[in-house]
Length: 312
Ligand code: C5P
Image 1 (cartoon, helix red, strand yellow):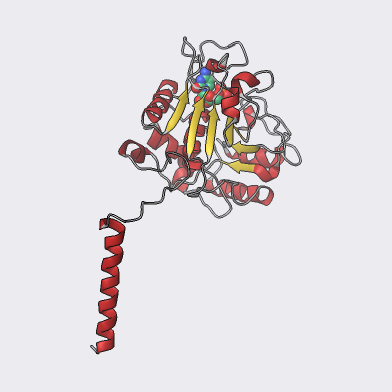
Image 2: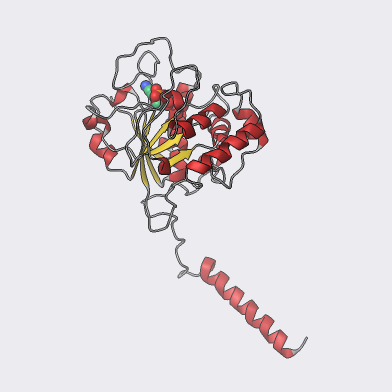
């Protein structure tokens, strides 16, 4: 080895030792940069959370993402899908002829604090006076036919994202993201048709042929994400997660700070809504593990991962 090479190796070793010492040993070592600008960032690690939270699962479908056949096989059982994986793939490709090829998600940054309010439909929002607090968040996620008109003092008036499926769909204004939770291939077909030529299929409940929504703000929840919520967050309890519980986990993936409002059954164990008198008193929480989901949200709050506003 000539002396120049020896010198180079020596310099590299010294530099390595210096960098290591400055980073980890020195009293002047730089503080680790926080991943977000909130007081506390969701991604900060702790065992209970990391056992469940998997950052690598894509919350939304995009043009260059493919669901595995295994995940499709789980998903197709949710509402007895009979068509095959290749039809699913063809239909998903069709989605991105009309909708944005990548979801409109604000990325995390050290100088940014993405605050989110997830607003469920529980009757406990009545007389809660949470309206101003909810509206103060950057992202406000509501579900299905959640009403705001006439309930502003309790639930706020802004909606940046509305999570829904064909049977629960309502018209949206031009600035709200339509977040489709698909439970069958027909739901994907519905999205493209309801925003263009009109949909004429049938389902277990009436489905709107057309809806008003901004097609540039459509996002579709990834079936593999739905499976992850069921497996990792609910330990496979219930048939599959409720829309509301999926919304909470979605928020953990796209926000730095999450506040949860409007979750919790009434005193008879029914999922009643804040805007109406309950019609079907024996529906309870249906196929969803309502009390288990509620327990996980409570645990998230105990672990300091969400703020849980329980209403009255
Ligand atoms: O009834 P709906 O499915 O439209 O409500 C949206 C979500 O809000 C539910 O999926 C559930 O997670 C939550 N919810 C609740 N308690 C209620 C009503 C709804 O936790 N009383």
